[in-house]
Image 1 (cartoon, rainbow, N blue to C red):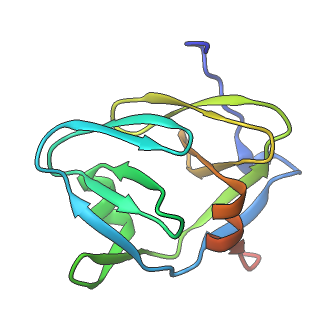
Image 2: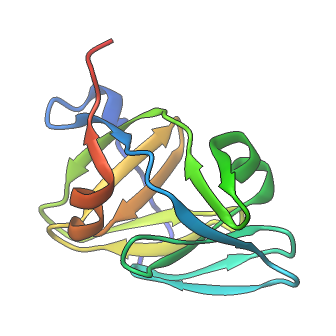
Image 3: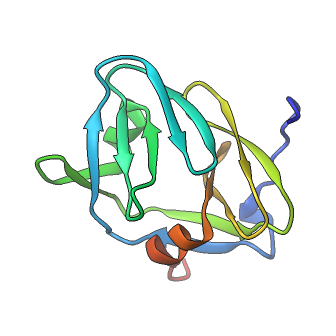
Length: 141
């Protein structure tokens, strides 16, 4: 894996789709101590208080507490959903390394996964099956 990770601006990529996360409820627990979460794309570190989210396929990923509070809303005890925010997504044709999380951990996307740009400088990798279940095309602005 390379330490030099230069990511494209997907807002300017003609192949990128404008997407929005469906209001799918997810289970959330808050970490009692620092640790590492094994995501589908690789290990990502978290700090005490961060949210550990469990998705529709029992996949897990950490979200810093500040970011979680900004982007998720409570549905019921231990259940949350992402607030509707437009992101940009492109289907990967080759492997790519992406820095994620508050610790800037590197995860690897494979051909068939989706590269998501949530906002400037904030990226993620989403497995194709998870993407199909959780994301949909966003209405044009």
